[in-house]
Length: 439
Ligand code: GLU
Image (cartoon, rainbow, N blue to C red; front, side):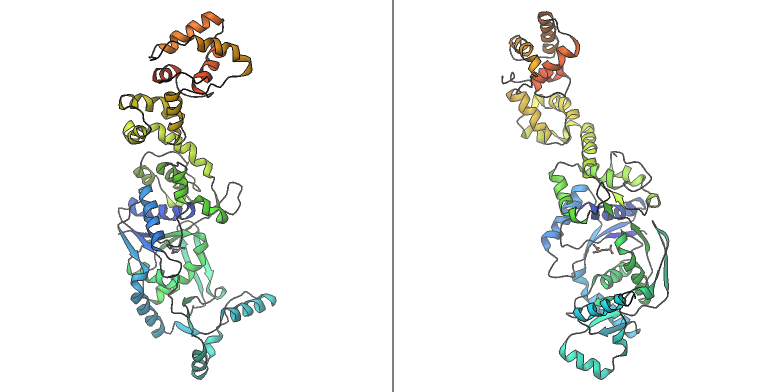
């Protein structure tokens, strides 16, 4: 069975970058009729916060990305300790004592000599006596002993991929203070939970190489790995600095609709067109991992708004009835109100502006050359309440009185009644007006 996981660290809010990872893994599982696990990578006790874990779940729920179960790494520390023992017994784990400053110095020296800054494995030549002496003054950390060979895999997006293990430092899996690091915890979880497919950002490619060796050392089955490109801004600029402002909750706050966001993120960076999809199933059915490319993917938050608007056009009254009622629209007008505004809003919040204009009267928008004409026309408005014939009758009367016709007649009248240059069918709009323009 296909089993995937989305493994955020609960150290912040989800943003568009991690949404892509979540969405790909979710679609793979759902397309295969498999399982999708939400795994909270919370082994860092200082930075992991329950409120972020809650926020991650809330954001995924908002998008309808349902999971089959939640796993938390902090509750599996015994499993990681057992794996560490296993690696120790197999001679693939060694204790090292360099402080961060010492390691930094080594790296600088290597770089000065034109060498890659790879850990020199000095700890491997320490005698037992030297280790004991070092242990007395500082706590050691634990590194995985890489086999110096070429690590190869067929990546679901990048294709044939290989990394020379000798170009990578032996990864630290347990810190001096005993904290288990992501690489070990992730490998143990992926193996023990039977994860079959892992999609993550291309910033993890080197991790993948080392993880493949650790999985093999532990006797696990290597999952299918795929690395999606990272997002950039519209001009190709790094997005990392702006991700804070592209948190999913901020997009929700700005009125972006879940299906609009998913429709964009499920296809952006692939050879398939970005189109509004009408359901999660449609997103899943058309998803092909192999259609995605390795090049950085440009993301522009502005693209979410036309998709949001198009999604709103499709909604039946039921989907917005509560919000319409909350605006104070009388129940008997709700359906007509929705039909009048649905194609003239970008987000749900825009409904309020239309109801304000309808219920309190618009502030007329009048071009200087139309001032006299509009004053005459407004003086000819019939008494409230208006109905479906009011617009036709009024404009015909204004035409007769002023001689204006066509655009020169209708546009100034639209602007006078709605306060805007663009909007709904005027006959429908006028029949819903509860007040005359405020002029
Ligand atoms: N917690 C890791 C991250 O957010 C998970 C990476 C992975 O998918 O293995 O980067």
